Image (tube, each protein chain N blue to C red):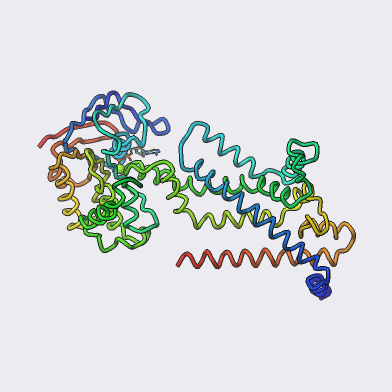
Length: 227
Length: 207
Ligand SMILES: Nc1ncnc2c1ncn2[C@@H]1O[C@H](COP(=O)(O)OP(=O)(O)OP(=O)(O)O)[C@@H](O)[C@H]1O
Ligand SMILES: [Mg+2]
């Protein structure tokens, strides 16, 4: 009950901080998921569909990166973007852009790996048929992507779920700066560390509800497509 | 037209096909017969270039790649419309673009599934899928058709229709190499019957 009151207070608060935190969370998660899947899905489809030297290696590399620890991804982006790093001149460290970059690094291999296994399941039969009618290259890839579009929906949500719930990388490259890079997960960590368990719990519930709404919405949209 | 020399194909170390020497002649009509697992599909896949031989050589002479059509034993039908399933066998751009639709519809009509043109591929019955796969192969002029049990799901009328269509192609000079379990079909369509047993060429009949 008190948690609920806390949520309402936060949502309606005059300073609107929670609304800003939610907006930042969504912006970061959506942007990174879109970019990561736009790269990962075609890449995974290429690996899954075509036979080429080093294919086994590519698959293994992808699967290894799927399990990349977020903290490590964060550290990597941190080194790249920090003032003395190779991209330091762009002053991106502790920005939402930096967080998006870290999430892209985390989600792209997941999107590629999942797509690879989805496409590889159909690949032999499709490849054989395509060969028999003289269909190849980019055209073939395009049709295969279209053919698997429904399963790619779940790739998108897996990526989004990862982005919205991730804390380690976001903390390192975003810095949890109030009114700038604070997102739900990093805010929860902060409130917990400060002993504000009630507030942390309230934020946790908000995160849960947002994930639930988006997943439900997505499932609804996908189910619509089936009919 | 296609010459096989000392061709060997293994799966997991077990020999699936072994042919010392054989030549498929231009305009010839061949039926591949033999029990399940005797190597018919493996030979067709080798001829189509889907598989590479583990030893020996397959020499294709005087045939452009797109003059060869191959229909697998289980063709893949895409989820999009039946018409589009045929269109994907035609070149994407260029001058043919305008005529592509008409050509695809005509190919469907030839196999008497013109009325299914707008249906999603996934909703077809087994026999309808096989007719679609045949239409898709025949939408372009071919000089060699490699067919893996092309009428296995067709009813009596459909089988005779498919045979008519294939005979028509053959009359126009297209070579046929076709796996079949139907002795009558082999005699109706082929001039040469190759009998396979455990991956070896066990006999050859000419009509
Ligand atoms: N991808 C594969 N992996 C392992 N073994 C295979 C593979 N493809 C074929 N084989 C084996 O090779 C042998 C020849 O198979 P093939 O498909 O050529 O037979 P077939 O004559 O076409 O039989 P059917 O009449 O049942 O279609 C069989 O023993 C089969 O089990
Ligand atoms: Mg077979």
